[in-house]
Amino acid sequence: MIEEFIKEEEAVDLYRIGYRGDTFAWYNFGRIEIFGHDMILDGYAGECPERPFAPTYENAFRWLVKEFGYEFEICVERGLWRNSGFFFEATLKSMKFADVSLGQFENRKDAEQALLRKAIAIAGKSFGL
Image (cartoon, rainbow, N blue to C red; front, side, top):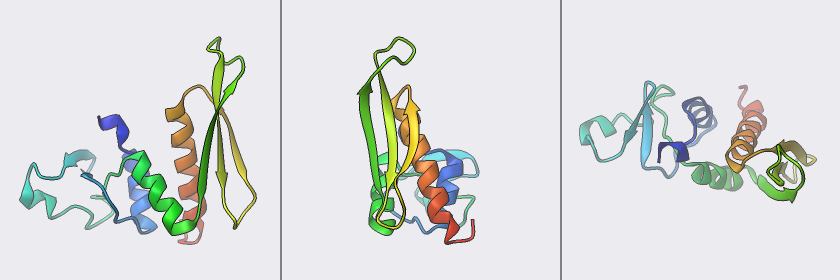
């Protein structure tokens, strides 16, 4: 289940560009905490970049769509990728810039991570990150 949450580095960057959204976990100086296990400790969630919320990839993408108007596309394509017979093509889209193709990935998780990193990097430019 922990794999469903974005990495701490990305959570910190999302925090810096304004993410305070839906989640049921947060990072506490490098350790992931699930809301509800310690109600007192939960009060510190999201109070600083060292304690950012830990959204799932789906929640992070949903927030980036809502806040920045991004569109994320992951297509499954047929081809020869290390003999698997298919690969994942990742593209970041927006009305504000030309489509950004991030290339081909062996699995969906790698494609999602690349899309999230690129979206945060582009959004972060307006925040001086």
